[in-house]
Image 1 (cartoon, helix red, strand yellow):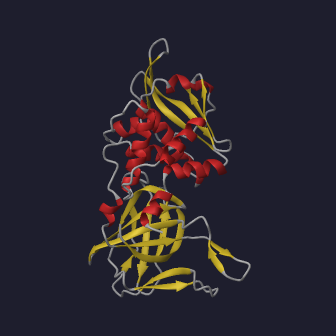
Image 2 (cartoon, one colour):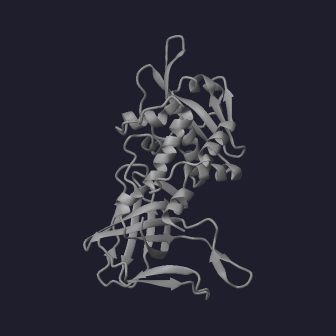
Image 3 (spheres, helix red, strand yellow):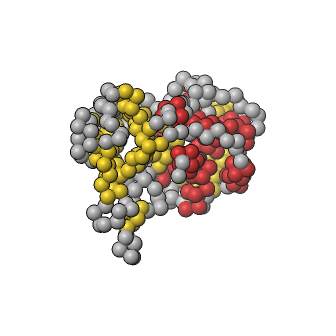
Length: 350
């Protein structure tokens, strides 16, 4: 499978269709900053994702086109381009967009929505304005309930941002997140004029693609194989020079990060000096660990993400001579939320 194929599998639209069919047994809200007059009439409204992007994170938003699908599709194109895929969008994007529209059920006013209570940390709205619930997505029924009074006052960019928010937040909830903070951060970044570096810019023409945490499934014939859910983590290892190396995580906790999480490492290791250890059950098809055979390799520092979608999370890529490479992930309070051995690394280029 090519790197571009891996990135395309992480597409927001693919996540939307797959997860909506399964359902994850929860629900998620979408919010807007709404300014009202003395008579409670709505003077202006903007999705919270875009408001926070402008006022909290200092991002400049792209210009709205006046057409919600065009704004929606433009962000999908941006997302693909960040993964190194510059192909024109196909009809599948509009098909998925129509599927999302068909899931919408309008209610007259925000107060008629079931409260979601999943904002998390938020920025204070301006005087005369308030953060109001705009929507709630019911995962079990694949229905998106939207307050018509607020929706009708959103511009096309905010309408597109709400639809993308609900798709992204569905994926975040799948792995246990209980607030929309990270989803809002992601959508604000993707709708900005500076969404981030592309994978080809970060990775270059020579890197290692490493995976870890794949499910092991026993088969009736005595063999074992990897499960269908894919690895819990994968990252690109890049070394620019002897004393400098970084990894770019594109998947953690069993979900695609959608934008790279860059982690600096203490030392470089020679990518040609890796040894793969296979599963002890006897199936040579299943690599289980990657051991560093470079005597100078040593790294165990915990890197705290300083800003961005996973701000405050800690990432530790550990390797020493003749020991397996491992990955440990910490939540912002310092608790370990995942640990795994790296099971395979292979040369790749974008």
